[in-house]
Amino acid sequence: MNFCIFCENKLIGNEVFCPKCGKRLDNIHIEVPVKKLIQDELKDIKKSSLNEEKEFVNEKNTLKDKTKNHTVKEIQNVTRDSSIEDKEMSVLTDEREIVEDPQNIAIKRDNFETKNHIVEEKQSIEKDNSVKNNDISVSPDKQEKVEKLQNTTIEENKDEVKDYIVKKGQNTVESTSNRKGSIQTSRDDKISTFSNIKNDKPKNIDKVDNLMVDSSIKKSSDTGRLSTNTRIYLGKRLTGNKKIYWEYGNPQLPNKHMLVTGKSGQGKTYFLQTIMWELSKNKVSSLVIDYTDSYLNNELDDDFKNKMGKKLKEVIVYQEKLPINPFKIQKRFLPGLVLTETPEDMVDRIIEVLDFIFHLGIQQKSLARRIMLKGYKNNPTDYTLTQFKEQLLETNSGENVYSRMSVLLDRDPFTYQSSFDWSKVFNYEGTVTILQMVQYQRQIQNTMIEFLLWDLFYHSQTKKDGTIYPIFLDEIQNLNFSSSSPTVKILREGRKFGWSGIFATQAMSSIKGEVDALYNAAEQIHFLPPEDQVSSLAGYIAPNAKEKNIFEARLTRLKKGQCIMSGPILDTDLDTKNLINTNKMISIDSFENR
Image (tube, rainbow, N blue to C red; front, side, top):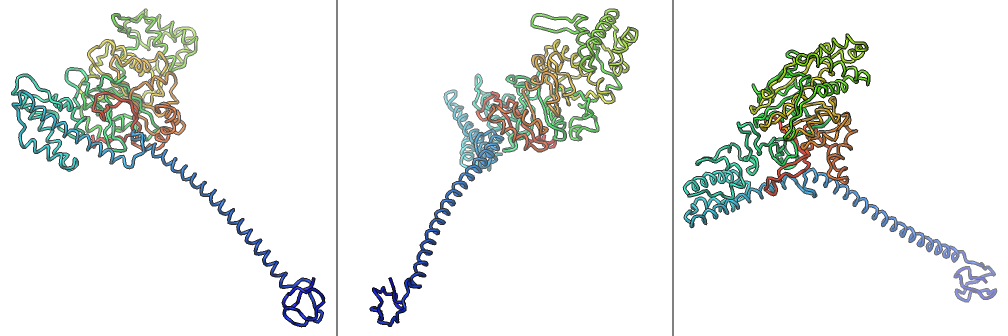
């Protein structure tokens, strides 16, 4: 088939002239016109390009959709992580929800509580009006005061609210003193300050901050018993600045023991000094057994020393020796029964201490027990470690036992005073006695501590006058925590005898023996721990396994002077005197703010 070269008309045969354009062909034909070929090729290319472009666009859209979906998922993951982070921060405030501004919430809560005070005051006034045949009327200025407080913001009239409530207490006492009988207002139930009101003047209202709680604090009386309202200020929550207390005198408290953990340099020693001061303010005396040199006079905080003044006492044991007798026959008081140690019981107790500290072998331990028992029975009133040393040196194989304990036997640190008067240390004068064991070697220090704790433990069982025995022990990883040790006895049985052990350590993992006894301490303060102990510590603090990760995050975020308080606090949100177990992240207040 041929075509016209000029117009590309289809030719039937060998025409001379093109039937369409009329041009002479001169037998020049082309089987396929070039232009046609080019156009067809261009169309194919264009069509192919369009198809490829469509495919590209489709692939691009598909990729875009996938990317978008991935991005959405990533955003959701980030949002979820943020939610978890927010939840952690919310948990830090123990609200268990994501909050926008915890400080605003604290302010709102304070406003809510203060507003409730106003409503309760008005109800109290109305109640007074209905008493005694309605013969008591509300004064116009009092009613105007309530209306003014209700119509204005809480924050602007906070001081007026406080003044009004105090004046209300005065007016209530004045009015009730003229009646027959006594009328107890609802406000008297809410504010225990009014329990101190006599005649016509309210007492102990030096501070009206935290009206629902702080003004109800009672100091220990001079009768020798701890007030049930005694509270030890610990610090403020990191969010909201709410004060957190150790409910020291509350009868609901399982025990008065405290465990303090955290690596060096995080504020443990400073915190313990604030506890000593808070106890002293409440007229509770305490004993510090210092074998770490952390409580030497030049190491103590100046503000602490200034506040304590003459109530701070220091005893250098190296100069005066320890005024106890390790060989004293002790008595244990059980309900309706008194058990007196036999010489064998007493010797076994002493040998157990020496074995823990000096690591005696089985034969050495047996020989030491036999020699000590014989020496004591020959001289029960004046037996000493020096005599024990002489016996060892005179006995075959005794030198091996002596060589193990020579550091102690050559420096006998006891006075062998038959009955040291512990009431001079533990009284209701608010003194802090630091028993300083500086200059002695560690093994001698540990021996003295063990015998001292045994002596005091038995002494506490003879007293039933409500005496409290707060004892501060730092670096407790060096002490004996076997099941028969005095420290474990104190932790497990000391509550009924008035013991209040405050135990501090850098590393819980270094403690050998009954470690679980330490976690029975009702009050626990955890500063930033060593990295290798974060997980195990979080496992003990977390209320359940699901929240362990949250508490790990909380522990690792702690800064110097910050800690997690784990223990019972007053349920002030419900306005009750019940204790609830909780975990709070707090900041330790300085002495200037106490």
